Image (cartoon, rainbow, N blue to C red; front, side, top):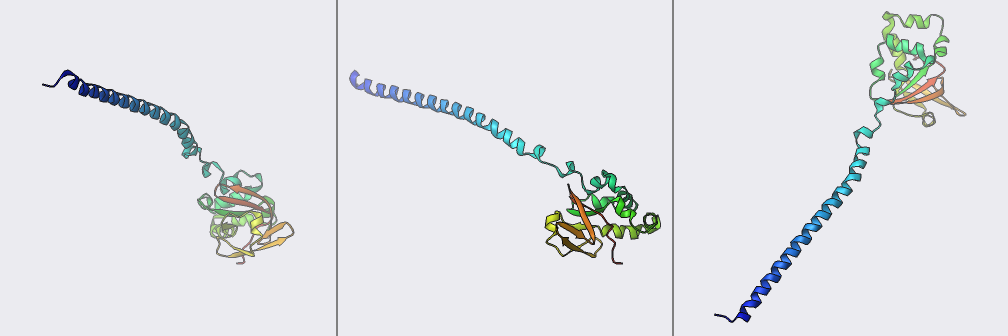
Length: 199
């Protein structure tokens, strides 16, 4: 049997080791609590940022009027809207695009030979009317300044129209662009003349 003083040393070592383990455990536990609280605190602003970048904060093109909505909302384009409806082309003007629509004003339609508009609006002339209207539509989304780089444009009618620059003015198919309105699916260029196809 060992003397008491030899037995007491291992006991002290065991107690010290136990104490150290308890301290390590307690300190790691505290660190975990601090880390968790920090993470939760950091997560709060991140979550807020993520919400701002999420779907709810995206600007939806559907919230911006499309080219057809713009024409319908314009008192200067009632004849054009009536023609689009008669030709049953509404769906073509609300698709994703992008589309450039050269929109003649009521005055531009009124400048056509007498009886032209009335004749085109008749159901039996729907195909011809649709062809003329498609001659006013181009795939793409170019503002007036960018159009100055073009010599011609390929229209939805499968025909080309010339682009001319005269000073600051741009003419497409002989029609002068007098205003431009961005749309959710393209752009509407208001023109002062009906652009008639060659055939």
